[in-house]
Length: 134
Image (tube, rainbow, N blue to C red):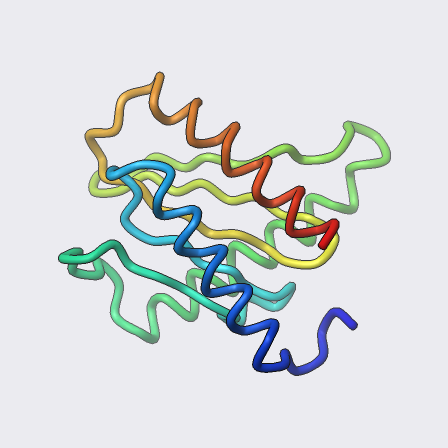
């Protein structure tokens, strides 16, 4: 049931999904799965990547993004479901996706090109939809 503590099996499944997302492109820095409150259920950094955020900054960022996602859901009846959000910062690009179960937070190297970004978005959306059905 969503919102409850995850079992060992669910944790392993989430970790594998993060690895699957990372495998979509060498430009993905981080793939994380969060609950609706922004708590990290699983996360994986690409090998050799140094995090840009300190642990407390990361917790706050995840909480803010999860909260934004929940707030957007209030408008979906009027404007339709949110497909994804994409934020471009000076040092990193951030993709967020959600399904009825979890929230996905994916970061990219700043130099990823637009064509690769769109390819990864499409592939990540498929993985997120598959996760919802399983």
